[in-house]
Image 1: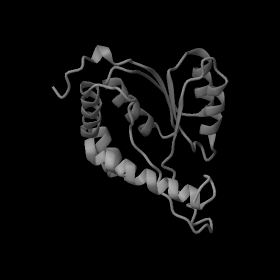
Image 2: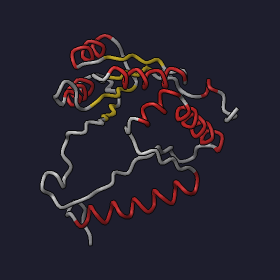
Image 3: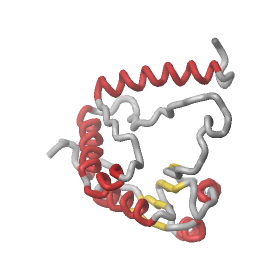
Image 4: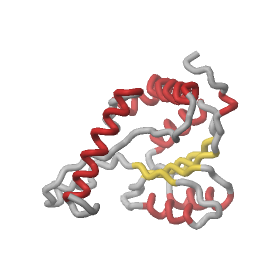
Length: 185
């Protein structure tokens, strides 16, 4: 057993996954369901609106680009109108959205991506989530998705992760200041 924290201590969520790529939606739902979450998959904006109108979700994960449109933004708007509004995670692996450089902007930027926990969590809680993510990374579905080039596969934890976050945060602040998005030099 990778963790000593009981599964019953982790809040199980009702999650709606929206993606017109059925395989992507199903992989996400399978991984979430294996961890005890309840997951519904829908494959377009109309289905998502129907689900959101009939059931309360704790979290919504939606693809940004569906059917050639940015329907994920409409899913976000629909979810925001709910009370309470669930958090919405927008994702995309769409290869034809131009980069800044392709659009004529001479910039490059690396988005900080990682999983953060609130202060005061116990070592057992950290170990649980590190173990959980390692389990997800070992599933055939995850490996297949990674083989298709969906994501950078770098995985850090502990001090190596903290050092990376500090370095990237400093770079992020410098870029934002240089671009005039933050005050200061």
